[in-house]
Image (cartoon, rainbow, N blue to C red; front, side, top):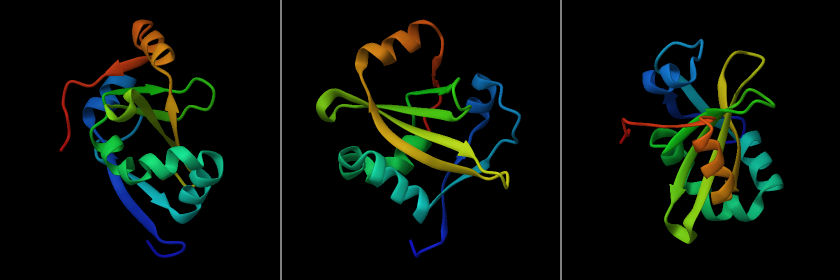
Length: 129
C-alpha cells in the first residue's frame, strides 16, 4: 500500500448490522490506510508483528462482534488457535464518515468469555470467506 493510499479490507455485513443495531447500509466499506497501520505498530508492535497480516481475515470472518462502550468502535474478535489468543480489530468511523480499522491487539480469554456471557460480544452465525 502506497503512502496515503486507502485500501478497502472488508465491508460491514448485514449480519453485523443486525446484531449490533448499526445505523449503516449493508456492504459499507471498511478501509485501512498507512496512518492506521503506523498507529497499530506504535501502540501494539508485537501484536501487529504477529497478526497484522490477518487484519483482513479478522474483519471478514470474525468469531464475535461488539460495540466498545467507551468509544463506539465496532469490535471484530477472532479466536486464533495460534497461542490460544483472541485478537481484536477495532473499526471506527472517521469525521468524513468512512470506517477504518484503527487498532489491533490481543484480549485475554477470561475477559472475552465474560463479554460473551453478558452479551457485549455476539457470536456470528454466518462466516464470510
